[in-house]
Length: 410
Image 1 (cartoon, rainbow, N blue to C red):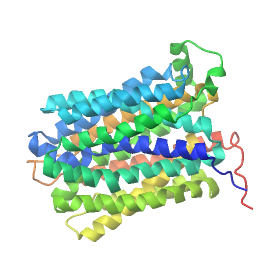
Image 2 (image 1 turned 90 degrees about the vertical axis):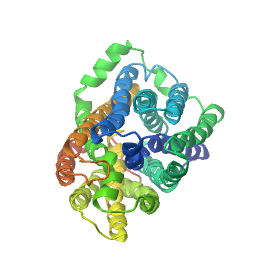
Image 3 (image 1 turned 180 degrees about the horizontal axis):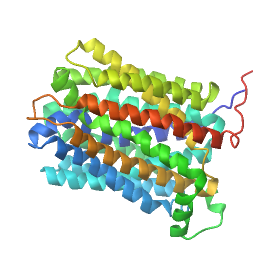
Image 4 (image 1 turned 30 degrees about the vertical axis):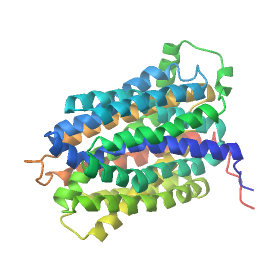
C-alpha cells in the first residue's frame, strides 16, 4: 500500500506550499508589473532586467553564505529568521518612491527570500521518505499556480487601481499569516544536528566540492535559465508583440494557474509511479516545443495564447516536480541543508545572469513598442532545456541505486 500522509505531514506540506506561494508571488509579480513599471518609472528593459537580477544575485550570495551554517541550527528557527527578513524587504518594496530605492529593496528581499526555498526543501527531505517526495513536490508546486490564480490577478487589479506599490503591501499582509503558523504550529526539526559538527567554511567547501553533488549543481544552473529568461518580459511580450490588452492579462494568468494547480499533484503522482526521469524528459520535450512556438508568435486570438500558456506551464511543472524528487536524494542527511542552500544560490545566481542576458538580447525602441529578438531568446532557452536532459540522466543514475523502490499499489 502506498505511503499515506499523517496529519502533521499534511500540515507541513500546506505550510510550506503557502510559504512558497508568498515567496514565488513576490518574485513573479514583477513580470506582470513589468509593462507598468517600465512606463511609470521611465526605465529601459535593461534597467528592469536589473531589478529582476538584483533579487537573484543577492539571493544567490546569501545562500552561499548561509550554506555553511544551514545544518548547524534547528531548521524551524532558521526558517523563521529568514522569513521575517523577507517580509521586511517586501515592505520596503511597497514603500519604494524611486527606481533606485526599489532596486535596493529587491536586494534586501533577495538576501532573505532566496534562502527560504532551500530551507523548505531541506525540511521536506528530513520529514518525508524518497517514495513520497514526488507527491509532496507536486503539492508544493501548486503554490506557483496559486500565485497565478489568486496573487497575480489580484496584484494586477491593485496595481491598476491603487498603483504598483499595492501588490507588495498585499504580500506583506498575507505573508504575516504564514509567520504566525511557523511560530505556533511547526515543530522543531533537529535530526540533522546529531551528525558531528564541522567548521562552517569546511562544511561549505566539502559540500560544494563533493563529486556526487556536482552533477546536481550543474543541472540546477541550467534549469534556472529558462524561467528567468522568459519570465521578466512575459507581460511586455503579451501586450506589445501579441497585442493582448493589459486588462486581459489577469485572465491569462488565472486560467494558466488553475490548470497548473490541477496538474501539480497529478504530476507528482506520475513522477513517483511512472518514473522521475521519464517524467522529466516528457516535460522537457514538450517544453522545448512550446517555447519555440510561443516565442515566435505574432498577434493571435486570446484563446490560443491561453492554450499555449497552459501547456507550457504544465511542462514546466513536470520538470520542477521530477527534478526535486531526484535531486533531493543526492545529499546525505548531514549535508542536506548545505546542499539545498548551495543549489538555491546557484539557481538564483544563474537566474540573475539569465535575466540580465535576456535584457541584453531583447530590446525596445520605446516603452510601448514591440520587443525585438524574442524568438532568439526562445532558441537559447530551448537549447538550455535540451542540455538539462543529459545532465538529469546522470543525476538519475546516481540516485536510483540509493533510493528505495516505491511501494507498489495493492
